[in-house]
Image (cartoon, rainbow, N blue to C red; front, side):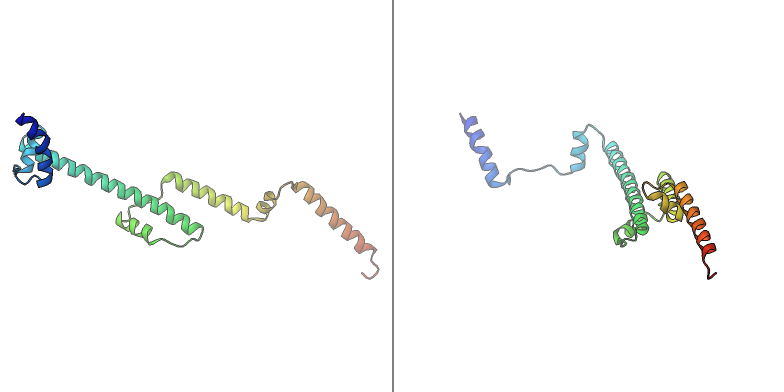
Length: 157
């Protein structure tokens, strides 16, 4: 009966007092190492390994963020958009070892070639739908011939 009473009311009293009467063992690392079934040296090595892995992940993450920032800054330059200070900061944080990915660089080179072609006169004509270049050439030649014939007929010249 005392067990039941202690079990029912003891938990509520512990919550009410905040567990002031309990003593917690000191030396958290020892208890963690013991709980994981390791010696103190093994636990320290494990903690060091975790810290090194975290550093590698952080470095890799910063590198990827800088690569993305490089891509964004390239497109901002290409389309003449305002620059972002955050992107520049991320690129500088990666120690300027960031370059555009090779696949993206190839795509950009192809885009530049296409844009140069589109900016030419023939490129502009090919963009117009339902235009036959041969037909345009024939019309131009016939117009020139008509002008020559009308010039021959002109009495002033």
